[in-house]
Structure formats: structure tokens, C-alpha cells
Image (tube, rainbow, N blue to C red):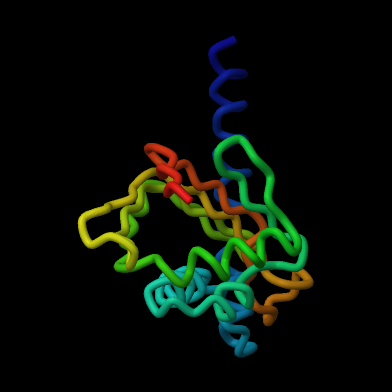
Length: 164
């Protein structure tokens, strides 16, 4: 019985080794063919830079056509999302993020962490909370642009409305 268990473990290890070997060959073949290794980090950094530049159009360029923002228990998409980016980009200042977890693949990436930023409306107001961004490579092609599909933003507290 002990031999059967040992053979089973040995067979499993051989299968894992073969899978790893195949993955290494695939990566090496892609590099030799001149295929660029996907780098969603560049897109994520560009997205942060767009916020700090108060560039709503660049933010929209990073969003997929069917992108969704989840915030305060609400789903925001389409024209509402574009309007939110126009409004928010104009007053956000000094966005800082701390990525706590992330995963990257050929056509899919996600990042989750904490954020904080100031506002142009009030020098002493600091907003902070957590975020998760889900990215995909447009058209699932290795040379497509990275686009945000989902932004889940959870502020620590909802900003108070200004009296009218």
C-alpha cells in the first residue's frame, strides 16, 4: 500500500514538473518571437498620473466602454460614469495608492489596496478608503490596450454635501 501511495505522489510530481517545463517553453518561445510580455503596471501607473493631472479625458481613455464603478452601494456606468470622472477629476489632488494585493495575467489583471487624496475645494480635507481595479486587455489580444472594467471604490466616509 505504501508503494502505491509513493508511486501516486511520484506521478503527481512528474506531472507538475512537466507542466512547469511546458510553461517555461511557451514563455521562452514568445520572447524569442518578439512578443512583448504584458505589463498592466504601466496602465495602472498611467491611470494614477491621469488623476493627479486632473485629466478626465485620459481617465475615460483608460476605461472600457462597458466599465462599471461601484461606490456607496451604487452601480455607475455609461454617461453617468463619464460625468463622474469629469466632476471628480477636476477636484482631486495628490492621489496616493498602496497596492496590497494584485494579480496579473496575459489579458487580465487586478489590484486592490488603499488610497488617499486631497481636494482642490478644501486644503485640509483628506479623502481615503479602499479600492479594487479590474483590468482587461482590449479584445483579449496580447497587443491590445489595457482597460479598466470595474472600479470598486469604498471611501471611509461619504463626503458631506455643501449647503446650497
